[in-house]
Amino acid sequence: MAGTIDGGKKAAAKNKAKYGSDFYAKIGAKGGQKGTTGGFFANRELARAAGAKGGRISRRTKKSA
Image (cartoon, rainbow, N blue to C red; front, top):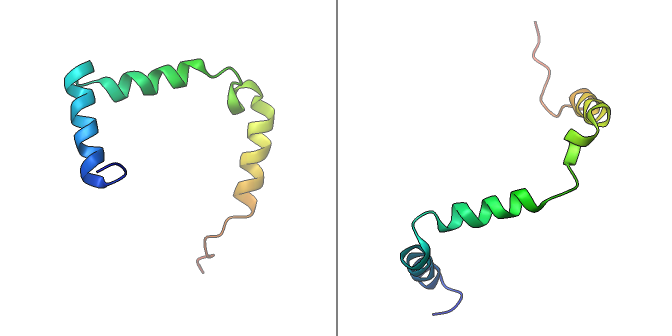
């Protein structure tokens, strides 16, 4: 049953039984802590400029007053 939804559920159940109910939370946290690039937080001015640019080209329709 490799690659099926039922197989995935069985694998998840086995991982949780074998390694604890917080297995997926732990491996997700490891991935988050391992990153070194810092993302936008490393360059606040770049993040500000990108947010302003995104705000100017909003795809939402303009509401008439």
